[in-house]
Length: 285
Ligand code: KIV
Image 1 (spheres, rainbow, N blue to C red):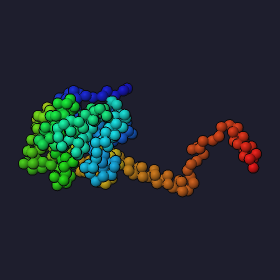
Image 2 (cartoon, helix red, strand yellow):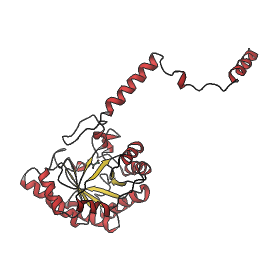
Image 3 (cartoon, helix red, strand yellow):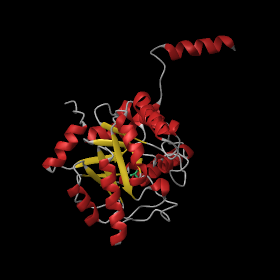
Image 4 (tube, rainbow, N blue to C red):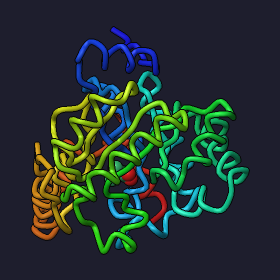
């Protein structure tokens, strides 16, 4: 049966009813197809693609064009899943009009359902401007990887009462600016639980505990494909790095030892054609 694509109204209803939203990143056609088949509610084409696909140290070098290209592939693979495009560093920091222009690019060129941007009180005017342009916006607070330099690295946020208060102020500001959902990253569960209870919009967590409206994980962590490091909050459901490397090791050995290809992997000549070829070759001698 064809999967029904969920809308923002469905996500609001899920929050009210207490049914959890499952959200996963994807960057390419095959994993997005798997995500849709697995029944994912939402897909994020995150700028984490910088690390997971391109091998950068972080998300800072990622460009709008890269994000759009990956969103296009994901949209083709998952036509019935709510897809979120992630605005990369530089695409929304300069001015409201530039933020609106880039947000609209995601919709026009990649047909995504919403965009996500990082920041709380400091991006209020950007959120308002993008929402006013008719685009669904997901806020992202707590650990915001694009500004990890200012945060002193990829560190959990809101672990003291004062720091928690700042995260809560960010959450309230994002909702007041008109955002449609909020992602909270690497924040203590009790802070996230408070935010989820205060906000009317769905609040999702990545490394921010269970007491909220849904969870996000990075696909490359979940399937065990990204091997550089594993954050504390990740649950690995598979180890494809091991499976893929072992398959490739076997292929190398088979080629070296002459065990591949076998007869079943060859295209044989059509009936009677091999004899005809022999005659041609003989005549040529
Ligand atoms: O780019 C991404 O995948 C993200 C997550 C780290 C939240 O923004």
